[in-house]
Amino acid sequence: MKHVLLTGNNKVFPGICLNVLSILKYTKEPVHIHIMTIQVSWDNQEKISLESVNLLRTVVKNKSPESEVSYYDVSKDLEDDFKDSPNKNPAYTPASLTRLFFTRYINCDKLIYLDADTMCNKSLAEFDKIDISKAEMGVCLDYLGKFWLKKDYFNSGVLYINVKRVKETNLFENAIKLLKEKKLFFSDQTALYKLSKERVYMPMCYNEQRDVKDDTVIKHFCKGIRYLPFFKIYNVKQWQVSQVHSFLKLYAFDDIYEEYHKLFPTLPKLN
Ligand SMILES: [Mn+2]
Image (cartoon, rainbow, N blue to C red; front, side, top):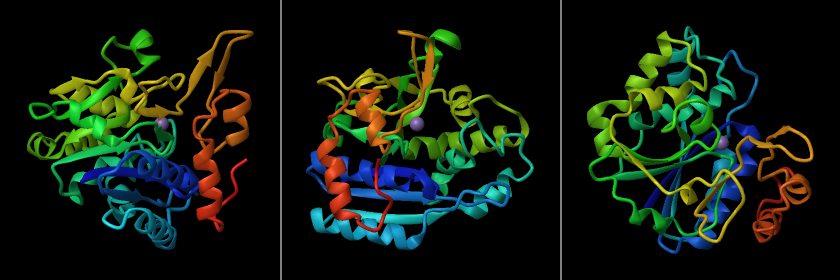
């Protein structure tokens, strides 16, 4: 069974549902989807509700009876550890800090962490090709950061985590501790970069930050830069379907959009 962690607030829940449908399309073995969410006093975003996760569980169980969906509200952890932190409002949203708490709740051997703005384009069995037995985690380089920051700067949107090892090295608790004290740019990603000692660099197909290719396992809809016809920073997410079509010219997930509208009639329509 593959264990997957997805985190976020209510705003990105359609993205999480799309991601889960993409996992089920390609991954034949059962999956255990862990959904972790937060709602904190200094931010007006709402958490993912238990009802929403129950709806997702029904869809998952229909398609894959042996798969599981678990729900964790870690609002109190975030509130307690970050209310006085200089990083309580990171570059994206406080919800991006949610994943740092997983070792307090999740027990498994290996965990695939995926950002809410990612989609699978192949089976998660592809991760079996990566040996993380002697590492804390498998990561991919950050497409932009490797030019601008450090040549081994990685993108934390996809992490293949050796759970037993990070509990021994305390990587995630140490990251929380560092973020309590020191303001960091790209807060949690930079903390994990500074503190992780044992990393395996995976091929970029595990966190494709550009166009979907034949070998793409995970497509990450992160920020990008286009130089022509003029310089533009773009940030198109997989749930912004018309921009995925018109700007990214990407049609690889059209069947999943159709399925989403059929299976989640009560969730926001994608447009
Ligand atoms: Mn992302």
